[in-house]
Image (cartoon, rainbow, N blue to C red):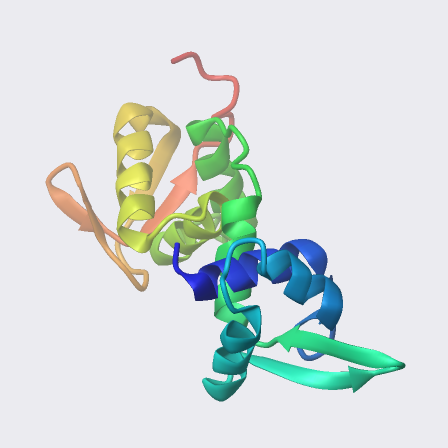
Length: 172
């Protein structure tokens, strides 16, 4: 972890959500950052120079506002513990939420994005996760051609997936 990541971790922990980003009281932020960084003023000035922070007047003092949303979400994902999730339940839940109400089919690309968001994993890992669950519980799903993204399942490529009506009660 470099000093910029550390500056964002401290900001997210100490600060509060604001319209512009995460707002932290300047003196509190500097004293806390100073425990791990030799020159916290330099770090904050560097953040301001590269456009990842602002220092503004706030009441009687000043505040630091961390503005990089991508870094904030990365820090939040580090700080938020992962929940234990049953793989089959996660996939079924994703398919059902994303399914077309008329056909019952969900786009596999959308299901991969759903898994990505729930597990905070890269696309490739989410895709591998989905394929493993589908292969292990093959009788619980029905496939169709189409969709925005195709996965090889068996000998064909499919882009749509549907949960069999009573998938939760079928025995493994």
